[in-house]
Image (cartoon, rainbow, N blue to C red; front, side, top):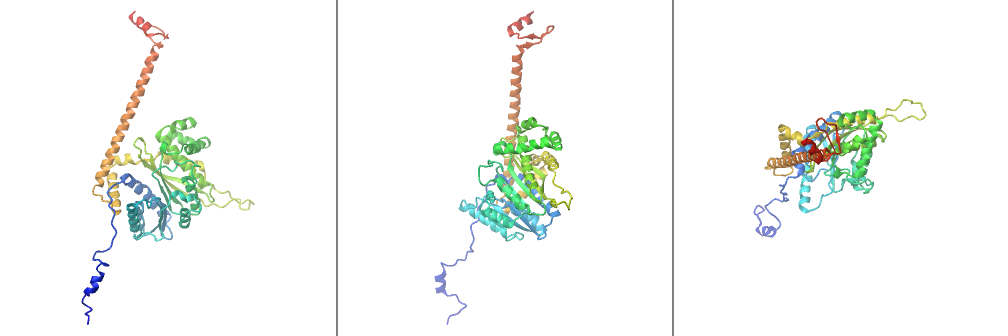
Length: 451
């Protein structure tokens, strides 16, 4: 009789190759290299702009179903989603339902494994809704009416928050260059959001330097600004007050400056979005909540990667009664007054590099919070603070080199002016006791001096 409590050595021999005392698990990717968007300045945007404004929106318009709907470009580590879950959803006991786009989801095994682990970690979080999705499509495919990206967006939307966090410019391509682009995508998303009755947030992070923006697109947005100068006195007065731009000549000169080019682009872009909202039925107003940015290009003198936060406010008004029984006039959006408000926000934008450099306490807090967030995404943050310091020193050296180059250029121009003035001296000179001598050469001038 076989004792069932004793192991069957023969059976054990047969199954030795099929079982193991070691538990199954996948290899965790080793993440050591920090990337530019891991700097504390990105955490400042995430924390002081995105999170604060989302919390502000929720305080006024708390979702009845206790779900925040979010569309964005979360990246491989899903850092934004992790942060929003921990700082917004968990304390408020709100579910996060997200639709994420990652066009580079499967370029290689290591990358794929890392992203799969990140996605698994996110899906296991308590307040992440099980309808959330991350799809391997380019964000601009939303512009395609029959695309998977548009189908997913229209099924889940409208959204509380749309976050278009780009590394490049939203206006890099020409208007007719591609069938699908950022302009058509944003226009289609605005159409989707027009079905929403409550305000919502639109975050846009984009390059704003001249080399990153299509020339024809910029000229179009520049004409929007000029049109406001010519037709809206309040706008013209505010533009003169904030930027010394009151007419087309001033505008052209201002666009030749680095910060001027960026400001006109941002203003034109905001006005374009406002124009889309005004044409909806019902109309939607557009309010700039704040603007902040930092320098990415080594040669930039001003922030060239800018995050602009917009709140879109639906205006529920009764349609015009053409028969005339309900004769009350509809209160439509005053684009002129909205544009004036935008100019003030434009003038008060934050330079995050300068802010963190001048405020040690805030800088250290952003370093701490960024480090904690990266650690949740399996980064070894032992040397993170040292890496941040090295990167800050690199930026300081670049700034010093730029300052020296600016001084050298100013001195060169001064020397050129001085040389030019001396050359004019032989044509016209004043001598003591004499009237102006016209067209006198140096030899004759020396003879005068000897007398």
